[in-house]
Every structure is written in C-alpha cells, then in structure tokens.
Image 1 (tube, rainbow, N blue to C red):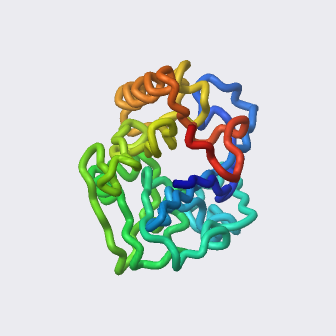
Image 2: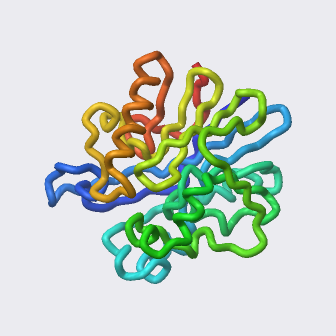
Length: 242
C-alpha cells in the first residue's frame, strides 16, 4: 500500500480564524492536502481540494462572506491524478477546501462520507454554523456511500475511517495501516493536539476536544498523526507508513 500527499491549494487569511489566540494582524498561509492511497486493486482519493473557479474569484463563487480569504492553486487534484482510475473518494468532511474539487471528478466514483455529516450538510442551521457551501457537494447523479461511525473501508482492516466529530458534525479521520493517521481538521496544526487552540468556529468545541485527545493518545502510542493544514509538517510526495 502506498500513500501520496497532493497539494490541492493554499489558503491565506487572518491567523485568528484558524487558531484561537493569534494576534489580529497576523496572517497565515497554509497548504490544502489531499491524499492518494493505492493498493493492488484500489486508488482512493482522500479529499478533493479546491474548486478552480473558487480560486479565480472566491467572492463570486461562494459569496462576499468568503472574501476574507485568498486562495491559490498550482494544480487541481484532477490535474495530479487521472480521475478515471479512481475507485473511491473519501471526504473527511464537507468544507470547501475538502469537497470543492468534487465537480472535477467522475460522478460514477462512489463518495464515502459519514451519514451525520451528509445530513448536516443539508440542514440550514448546520450549514450556517459550519460555513458549508452546498454548491460543493450538491451534485446530481453521484453515487454516495453513507457510513455510521468507525468503518473498515476495504474489509481487511488496512484502511479504517474513524469518526472524529466536532470540527464538523460528522468529521472523520483515516487510519492507514497500523502507524499512520490522516487526522484532517481535528487539528489544523500539529501543536493543536496539545494546546487545543482550535479555529474560531466549530460544530461542537467539546466534541472536537475529545476527538483531539483521541488522536493525541494515538500519537503518544507511536502512531504518526498528520494534522490538517500545518505548513511546517505537510509536504507533497510519498508518505511513510511507519
């Protein structure tokens, strides 16, 4: 089994949006990772990065409330991976930087997402609280596999989807093998597992803290837990499975 990180874009914005306690004038630029997991029979994409239309004009694509961000992208996921070879797409959650690239990918490739995330993404109050943009995932004719809680993706224990809610209602992380967890946005930065300085918004801060402590416990047992957007940790290319 092989894991490769793809850089699916960049976000620049006030740091205090993404990490509580930061100085108001400080800005932060961080990467948007997607991951390709390859087995002998599967090519699984974890998250889809930005929609190129949003990169060209974020306010026009998502509305003026999104104009506090600057988006960049060298290549979309569809330019880095042959979409016709994908067998599954796993969405850790429905935020624009994780689901925005869905429009670039074939509708017949099944999307695996937590049921509570999907239902939250279609509830008005949950959409507002979580800053979801339904245009990213309300796409006709797509095959959808809804799961409930921790899930053995391939049935052999090699890839486990772990329900880690809080950042969004049905956020999930991905354990690959025995020594690697793609933590996604449980913790944007590696330090967040310890200091619990989450973004300024969340579906449930208490649940996010519990999820962070869960991943911290795994890290303390020797498992590599990759954060969601840490520019000091994440680099495109092969990811060691430990």
